[in-house]
Length: 188
Image (cartoon, rainbow, N blue to C red; front, side):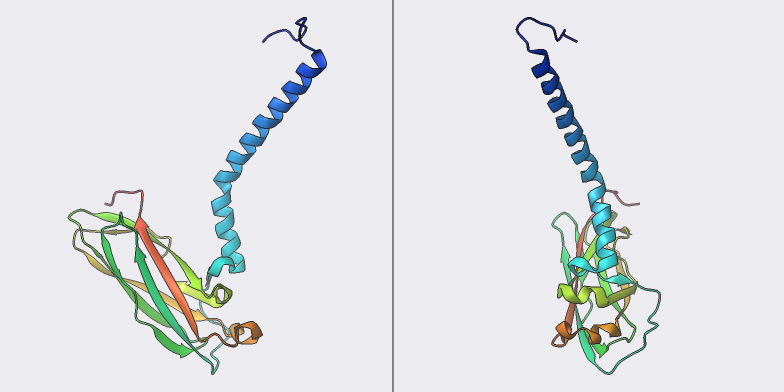
């Protein structure tokens, strides 16, 4: 490393420049580290709070069924790089709190195995915290063989506590939307 006592360089200025350079490197390293942990932390935050329409996960519905009905609509979108056709489940109207099961139907339209995954959201976002999935194919890699068609079940209920939220008194429909995309894995 060069000597700091060079006749044309002020030692105090050189020390400050070195401090600024080290601070910049530390900031850059911190930003890279934050980028790696931001997605998992955001997913955890959304699952805990229901932020962004993220539904909760449940094992059953301990709160019972209430008289108010809710229509749940289902939507599917498939990324261009995934050679699947996915048919969304038909909409369902049931009492809030009732546990229901629906199926999406996925078909691999290619001549090779393809692995895909699905991510989801719920709208309106405010209702997401009250939408609870007991069983779901989301975030699980699915490998479909050439021409294979599979049922992809979702078991869910709408939490009766939705009825206690006056902001949601006018909500009559919830939409669960899945976006399917190709996984990094090539299939089995």
